[in-house]
Image 1 (cartoon, rainbow, N blue to C red):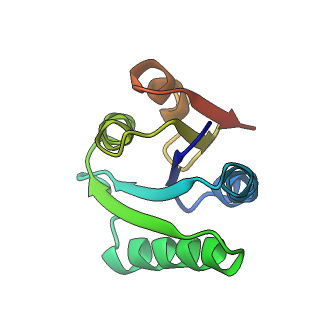
Image 2: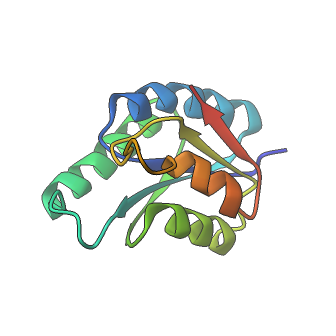
Length: 126
Protein backbone atom coordinates (compact mmCIF):
# COMPACT_ATOMS: atom_id res chain seq x y z
CA UNK A 1 0.00 0.00 0.00
CA UNK A 2 2.81 2.43 0.88
CA UNK A 3 5.48 1.68 -1.69
CA UNK A 4 7.18 5.10 -1.33
CA UNK A 5 7.41 6.71 2.12
CA UNK A 6 8.70 10.26 2.62
CA UNK A 7 10.09 11.00 6.07
CA UNK A 8 10.98 14.69 6.63
CA UNK A 9 13.35 15.13 9.56
CA UNK A 10 14.88 17.81 11.73
CA UNK A 11 16.94 17.67 14.92
CA UNK A 12 13.96 17.54 17.28
CA UNK A 13 13.41 14.75 19.80
CA UNK A 14 10.01 14.08 18.23
CA UNK A 15 11.61 13.30 14.88
CA UNK A 16 13.76 10.63 16.44
CA UNK A 17 10.71 9.11 18.13
CA UNK A 18 8.85 9.13 14.81
CA UNK A 19 11.78 7.32 13.17
CA UNK A 20 10.87 4.11 14.98
CA UNK A 21 7.31 4.26 13.67
CA UNK A 22 8.56 5.06 10.16
CA UNK A 23 10.94 2.11 10.30
CA UNK A 24 8.12 -0.30 11.22
CA UNK A 25 5.94 1.12 8.42
CA UNK A 26 8.70 0.71 5.83
CA UNK A 27 9.39 -2.85 7.01
CA UNK A 28 5.70 -3.82 6.96
CA UNK A 29 5.17 -2.48 3.44
CA UNK A 30 8.65 -3.27 2.11
CA UNK A 31 8.56 0.32 0.96
CA UNK A 32 11.04 2.72 -0.55
CA UNK A 33 12.07 5.14 2.18
CA UNK A 34 13.16 8.68 1.38
CA UNK A 35 14.49 10.83 4.23
CA UNK A 36 14.31 14.58 3.66
CA UNK A 37 15.93 17.47 5.50
CA UNK A 38 14.76 20.98 4.64
CA UNK A 39 16.86 23.97 5.60
CA UNK A 40 15.18 27.35 5.69
CA UNK A 41 17.30 29.84 3.71
CA UNK A 42 17.11 32.63 6.27
CA UNK A 43 17.59 30.26 9.19
CA UNK A 44 20.58 31.13 11.33
CA UNK A 45 20.71 27.47 12.31
CA UNK A 46 21.90 26.42 8.83
CA UNK A 47 24.98 24.38 9.42
CA UNK A 48 25.80 22.20 6.44
CA UNK A 49 27.85 19.80 8.56
CA UNK A 50 25.01 19.38 11.07
CA UNK A 51 22.48 18.67 8.31
CA UNK A 52 24.82 16.17 6.65
CA UNK A 53 25.39 14.47 10.01
CA UNK A 54 21.64 14.32 10.69
CA UNK A 55 20.97 12.71 7.32
CA UNK A 56 23.81 10.23 7.77
CA UNK A 57 22.54 9.27 11.25
CA UNK A 58 19.07 8.67 9.79
CA UNK A 59 20.46 6.60 6.92
CA UNK A 60 22.58 4.55 9.33
CA UNK A 61 19.64 3.99 11.70
CA UNK A 62 17.40 2.65 8.94
CA UNK A 63 20.06 0.62 7.15
CA UNK A 64 21.18 -1.06 10.39
CA UNK A 65 17.58 -2.24 10.72
CA UNK A 66 17.65 -3.61 7.17
CA UNK A 67 15.76 -0.81 5.41
CA UNK A 68 17.55 0.94 2.57
CA UNK A 69 16.82 4.62 2.28
CA UNK A 70 17.60 7.58 0.12
CA UNK A 71 18.43 10.96 1.60
CA UNK A 72 17.61 14.37 0.16
CA UNK A 73 18.63 17.79 1.42
CA UNK A 74 16.77 20.85 0.14
CA UNK A 75 16.54 24.51 0.99
CA UNK A 76 13.30 26.48 1.26
CA UNK A 77 10.08 26.71 3.21
CA UNK A 78 9.71 23.27 4.86
CA UNK A 79 6.00 22.75 4.16
CA UNK A 80 6.29 23.71 0.50
CA UNK A 81 9.48 21.71 -0.05
CA UNK A 82 8.01 18.62 1.63
CA UNK A 83 4.99 18.81 -0.68
CA UNK A 84 7.18 19.36 -3.74
CA UNK A 85 9.47 16.43 -2.91
CA UNK A 86 6.48 14.18 -2.19
CA UNK A 87 5.19 15.04 -5.66
CA UNK A 88 8.62 14.54 -7.31
CA UNK A 89 9.15 11.08 -5.83
CA UNK A 90 5.49 10.09 -6.18
CA UNK A 91 5.21 9.42 -2.44
CA UNK A 92 2.33 7.31 -1.22
CA UNK A 93 2.54 8.77 2.28
CA UNK A 94 4.42 11.42 4.24
CA UNK A 95 5.25 10.42 7.82
CA UNK A 96 6.14 13.22 10.22
CA UNK A 97 5.90 14.22 13.85
CA UNK A 98 3.39 16.69 15.19
CA UNK A 99 6.08 19.01 16.52
CA UNK A 100 9.50 19.95 15.20
CA UNK A 101 12.04 22.69 15.64
CA UNK A 102 10.19 25.31 13.58
CA UNK A 103 7.08 25.53 15.75
CA UNK A 104 6.17 29.11 16.65
CA UNK A 105 3.20 29.87 18.88
CA UNK A 106 1.69 32.37 16.44
CA UNK A 107 2.07 30.22 13.30
CA UNK A 108 0.63 26.88 12.24
CA UNK A 109 3.01 23.96 12.63
CA UNK A 110 4.86 22.61 9.64
CA UNK A 111 2.79 19.42 9.97
CA UNK A 112 -0.45 21.43 9.74
CA UNK A 113 0.78 23.17 6.62
CA UNK A 114 1.96 19.93 5.03
CA UNK A 115 -1.47 18.40 5.61
CA UNK A 116 -2.99 21.28 3.65
CA UNK A 117 -0.44 21.20 0.81
CA UNK A 118 0.52 17.55 0.39
CA UNK A 119 -0.25 15.66 -2.80
CA UNK A 120 -0.64 12.41 -0.82
CA UNK A 121 -1.83 11.27 2.63
CA UNK A 122 0.08 12.58 5.62
CA UNK A 123 0.50 10.38 8.65
CA UNK A 124 1.22 12.58 11.66
CA UNK A 125 2.74 10.79 14.64
CA UNK A 126 2.27 12.38 18.09
